[in-house]
Image (cartoon, rainbow, N blue to C red; front, top):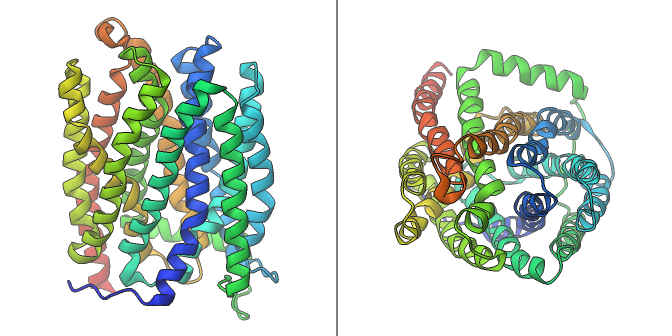
Length: 417
């Protein structure tokens, strides 16, 4: 497969599209990584922490489907996608800033719910701009580009957030809120100024409810979409569990400081960035499914090492494998879905993508927290925190047969068409 060079206008669109990813990735990483540390300091168990962080997935079970389908049909002077971003970003920013000053688990639970609600109302219409504006033949590179921005936001949150947390526990949340507001603000201004807004076709009179019903019918009819939903849920389960307990594994399980943990995870993020760039190019050249299957084997088996081995040097040497494999898992799933999207339902199918994501994000932190508590005895050398690696490994390896079946189902559907 020969890949063509990106045009200058496509490069500009990808640059603009990357800005909200940076802010959103930084914000949600601050919540998923440093909120567990904050909650643990308040005396919460790993199961309670998993339930609270898993609230992200509960929001993803219904909000993306509603906002995604609605944004397909909304007509305003700013298009159909941007109004959702403009409405949802302020409450998400406010909740994120206030989390840094929360002193009880009840307050934290309420603020987390507000943050995740704003996050998903803004994110799904924004992400639907990718299939709106980016051709299918550069879908892999577009997702690689987005993954670089996501990796940059994640790395900034992990490294900078740890340093800020050591200075004052509120600082990562305050700075995260400012970055989120700034990146979304610049993005909206740039989209309006450039004219890259999604507009509903004049002859498209379907309501959001009708669009949603059409997507459900499509999912029932097409086996490849159902297989994607199951596989993506397993991928998101692994990523969500890692994000929630990685820093606690290093601080509580291995006995390092938060600043040291941030430096370690920040080092792994270098491999995340590199893997994101390479995986997008490889996907457009070799095929998304082939690249993902290879990465899943690397990632799934690599995750077993810190679960089975306590030697910190050996665990450290596996970090590049985990980083590169994780980068592919964070980069290519949406590129896998884009060619399956029907015209006129990009927002609704993007919401369907997040529905599958929500299932995994709900279960990952919860299962990780339960496993840590249950295996505290057998894995006493890490206070049970190594259990999260086993949960993630099993989830990733179970997804490989689903990916193979998805590839066969997609090929069969193409032959029928």
